[in-house]
Image: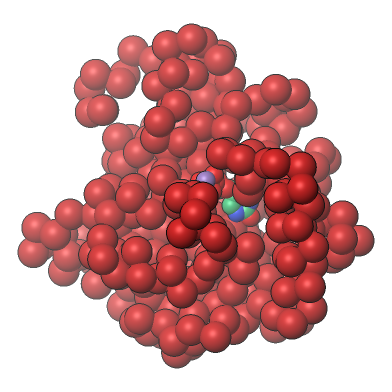
Length: 310
Ligand code: PSU
Ligand code: MN
């Protein structure tokens, strides 16, 4: 997809179009987290807060989604609210983004699809919660998220809280290394684990400020190295759920997924919903706080990138 050929079905929200024209910092946001990751109305509250944090941080937010076949680069508040309430919204990754456009359907874009759309629109920085990765048991299920391949090919900086502990974090790091994706832990030597600040794995790389992350991105571009980067930003300490507590809930959720024969793209949404239920809502609080934390850092990285490239 090139921006030129995509123009016929792409709608730029006015503040995003203005920021692109002026070379101002922009942060893309995904929408599967809205349509499949959190229940209404928490999902729209989260989406609004995250957009506000990016604006307060000095960048322009652009939530990406497909609405009735239109690829939206930035949503109005009304569109955001409508998407958050859409029942039957699709979960769109690289494989089905164009399907929803051609069939004039609506859906939330995953990390992979949001990266594709952000890059086509000229946006370099993207904030999310956690990326998809290699699922536990992938050696038999072959369940590996398309997010990992996208990170290997599309030059966007993805700010996450690491990979969710519902995944096999060790295998996820191995695939990222094989595919040449830098994983930069922010201010820590340890790979964070989404709801928890620490996983048992060392982080491949560490940087302590946004300007250094921007400089790293620029050096990769100057070298002509393809692909994106993953920033792993640990959840704030005051809202983290210790890894051992999460491990019990994750195991129970995985048992339920197996028993109910959940497969394919339903696995991640099922596990998230189950864990929400098992933690009595605690996991959702943590999830929201970590997305907010990532949005703040992403705004700083976007600002550093536009300063360094102006
Ligand atoms: N992390 C969350 N909530 C989510 C997801 C990640 O806290 O809803 C979504 C993201 O959109 C991610 C997707 O790209 O799950 C991965 O799904 P899969 O494993 O099917 O590729
Ligand atoms: Mn999968």
